[in-house]
Length: 524
Image (cartoon, rainbow, N blue to C red; front, side, top):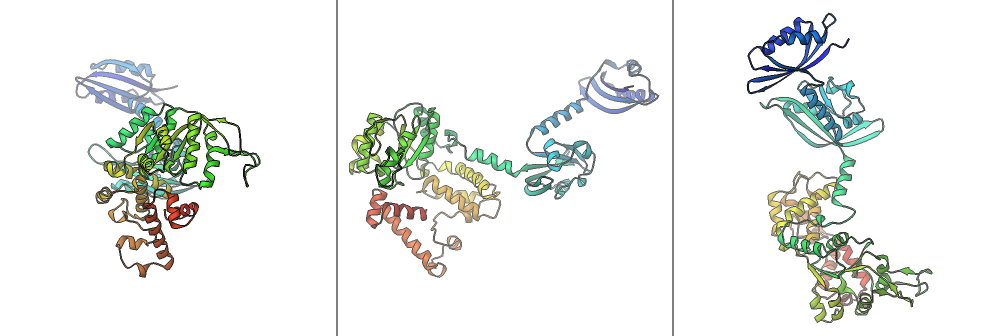
């Protein structure tokens, strides 16, 4: 016979009510399993769970006896006591998270464990609840140290299971009551693979959106707002901004916001040799030239059908090819090299340059008619020196990104290091900042990036010790190869600074355009 009874009892609030109830229940041969008490104004609500022994009367008889208590105002049976409901909700909540979580009390006994922790530790809740945590097969029992008021955050641990080795970040913290006394501890296990997957999903989304452009400054917000407004149109967009400001990021975000069904096809006009540019952009028919495929090849304008083609560094296009591009934009058709057929194209055109288009037109390096064709909706992306207030946000973003790639655990940047970043003029803009932060994360051995790890005036041919000490004793610390590399980089930097384009710089240096591109990549 089921003699378990759960009741909700409402009493007038008078001293001794609970004691009287307990005496009555015991006198009737029942044991009190649990009691919850709630007080409101002049009333007390008792939630009672009682269980009868072998000689106990029926539950109905016990309830009749309880009704004789003078202070009783209401009585009803219930399915669960408040603390049971809270525990059930807590268990459901814990079982819904992707991290393994378990709790111990102040004696080191397991009092709660969620499904993920059960799977990781290969245990079942009924087998471990009420047992000492030392009976679980853990790599260590750091959680017990939390009972002495210690905290451990993101400690790397390996757990060996029947299915192999699992790697986790483990966080352990003490649990205190309202008086500050330690009454237990909790351990949370985060699967390292899941963390990497989540971080990559956040940091490297498959599609670039405007929310991926980091910045709260007025200048960048205005640029984003304008780009969002014009994204749904089919008009030509010209993005101007210094090298490293994120022109391709803007172009990709505009493409996604436009809702166009085709691909986003980026083309760096400066990175393609002049001999290949025309065939890459417009394609060719079979046998059009030596080395051409027999079946021919579609150009990038065709590949981007229904999508967006992004022509970066458009001022690097030779004048002859600029004329062919202008015709393609006017007629909305292209003709493959060696072909006679006009092929309709529907790609939206976004161009970009790190130079002033007007100046290029004035110096006869860019066709005036093409300038007016592509410069319908100009967007100016501000350089980093004009939005210094965005440096903390960008720095935090890059540290999070690099922690994942480099398997580091850097927790931010010191105020001195941040001040050092804000004092720099950033000629390389966001790209340069990212490189500086990457270097700092690699060099940093503390939890925070410190000022010593921020090396801005960087020469790739120097050793790390040179960069930190700023020593002038270059000859003693570098090899002949390193010195030649350093000299070559200085020559290339000077040539580029004094030339209108990469091709012009290559002509000055008397090397091919392709050779200069390789050296630029070599010296970053």
